[in-house]
Image 1 (cartoon, helix red, strand yellow):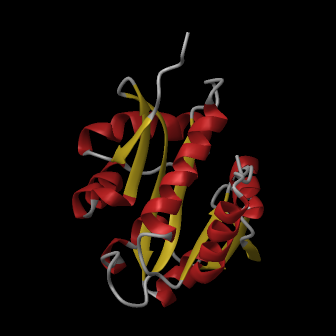
Image 2: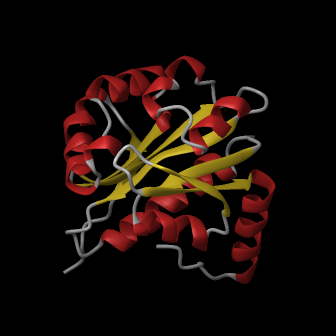
Image 3: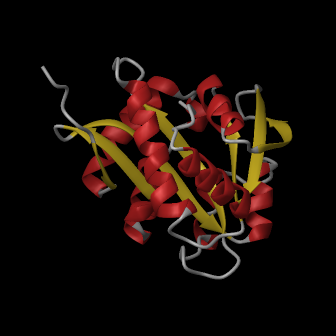
Length: 196
């Protein structure tokens, strides 16, 4: 019997309870989004959150925030909180945009979680790496899975800071041109790089 295919699409306000439920399951309290923050981001631009669903059930998502360079640097250094960047969010089409990976999360209890991660990464490649002009993308990792994704994607380690939970957080970044070169090289080889 074939397993149902997942679909990827933009978040809607009605998806927030499921998104929050995922975060409560997998992130420490200090890394969980406030519902009002998610609502404001989704209302500003639903493309900032891309959701993977099977039969309309959430299986994973990622969030991307387009920011000016100075705010992007501050968030990667732990000098500004995610919820405090709202006034600085730019349109994806703005010049000199830097993307910040707000979150990547999948349902680890589902035995297909690696395929969901791959689908989300493919969606990010189509819609952002190849679909938008930006200078660089950065993220900090609070889980082993997040660290693995960015390191396998050749993000460069930029340092760390202590999170609000007292644990070490590692920051990474990569220039868009390097991501595009990776995508083109992988496509040229006709193979899929295992990132998940």
